[in-house]
Image 1: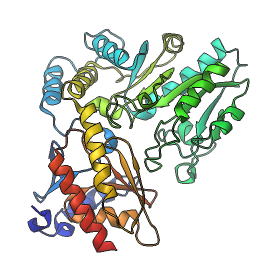
Image 2: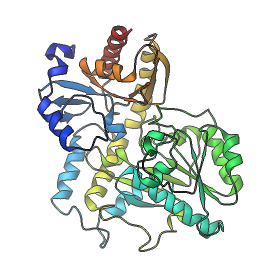
Image 3: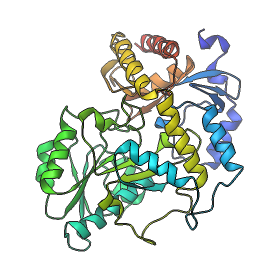
Image 4: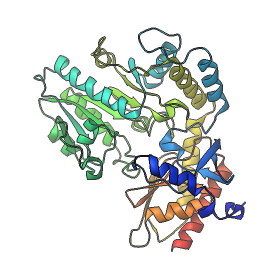
Amino acid sequence: MDQRLNGDIANASSPGAIALEDRWCAHTYKPLPVVITRAQGAWVHDDAGRRYLDMMSAYSAVNVGHSHPRILTALTEQASKVAVVSRAFHTDRLGPFLERLCALTGLDGACPMNSGAEAVETAVKAARRWGYRHRGIPANQAEIIVASGNFHGRTTTIISFSSEEAYREGFGPYTPGFRVVPFGDLDALAAAIGPNTAAVLLEPIQGEAGIVLPPAGYLKGVREACDRTGILMILDEIQSGLGRTGRWFAHQHEGIKPDGLCLGKALGGGVLPVSAFVARRDVIDVFDPGSHGSTFGGNPLAAAVGLEALAVIEEEGLVQRSAELGAHLMDRLRGLNSPLIRDIRGLGLWVGLEIDPARATARQVVEDWMRRGVLSKETHDTVVRLAPPLMIAPEDLDWAVDRLAETLAALA
């Protein structure tokens, strides 16, 4: 059913709720004018009772769907026993969680954290200390190579190696020790590797940049360059991992294995911030008591939810579902033949629509699509991101594309 029959979306959500948030919350986001009050599966409801299809999944944090019953059971059962005791003590939940995570990645150990940015910060610290201890880099001279267009988080260290001025302006002085090379350019990467290089840190697919895929063979080439020069290859799969691209991890499309892996978002089952830096043994073992930590990182509640999230993804076949529905989604999108679309790129259930700025902005597209009952988000004014929960029904996915066709026709 056309969701517009339920009323005018522009007036559906309470202006009071939006105004209250706007008054008291730092203006770090520009949300769409909708107030979400409950959610189930791939659908969310606003405070006027109107239903929308979620094509964002909270930037991949809700891969298993909203309010998954198994996740909620794991959450409530563990919370009723013990939720947080800090890493000052052992618990019976952390070991099984990290054991499963290491088995999935093929790596040897993990450092549990909370947010994705914390996982990346952990990777940066590990790479630097590893460089001093194992590569003989002089003290305080370690360098990490990153790619232009990257998005790894918003801490002061991470924005220091961003190429987006909007993320950096007014937040200096910036942390040194990073070299930025063009994403997808193996020659530039090879030229940047020097005696003080400890690691290369990359997203296998750049999400915030607009679902940007590198040339075929790029990750394999990076792996070979790292092996040749004896430096670490660390991948940030916080958005691309855990089934989003049709494999457990995006790097598996090229048959490689990194030395370190940053994970988060979907690891929390859509209910908690859960992240981890997973690495080979000599990398994870650079940490010793007191060198790193987090009060909430690895708490028993997060570990129980993370373990169940991994089980749900595996047992409900969400990785294969992402591959199959992702291929169907790409076929449907390519069949739209809209003059507003300049490019369609993606992998699995993760797609970016590049909008012709001469015809419309991505914000106009997502706002009109919202009025038709589908929620998404723009990035960099020109790209509409499509990333539904991996459990989305095929007919719901088709319904969203049909509404998108209406949006594009209206704006054209």
